[in-house]
Image 1 (tube, one colour):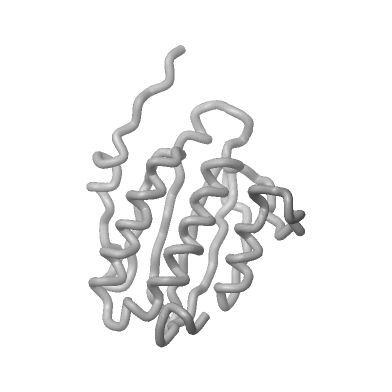
Image 2 (cartoon, helix red, strand yellow):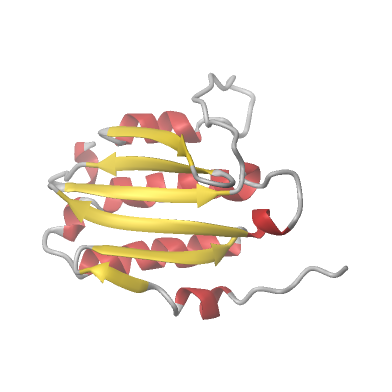
Length: 157
């Protein structure tokens, strides 16, 4: 059976604000969705007070969490690995980023060797986030979350 083609634009045009300080959306589990997700983060932070204080760290953390979900978030094939759910919320001066995928596998920080081209993403998340972790979802998959604090400028992480 051929795979269905997803329109990233069509899905992201359905992002709905939950409250003035929260937003969520469903997107295909593809590398092209990363661009739309970061664009949505920028729009979200532009619409909240002091959003620029979260932008630098949040862009990198969101990029890493979405990239991990695209690369490792499927349950081993089937329809459930084709979509991701992303939620952004600014509460109590922390930006909460959640990325839900279909894999039950718990993400872990690992020590990448100098020769490896990947394997440093969760280390960066750990360094930039106030806190991060994952939790199982009801049914299938998990949610990986990170809480980002404000920074006076990009170099203040």
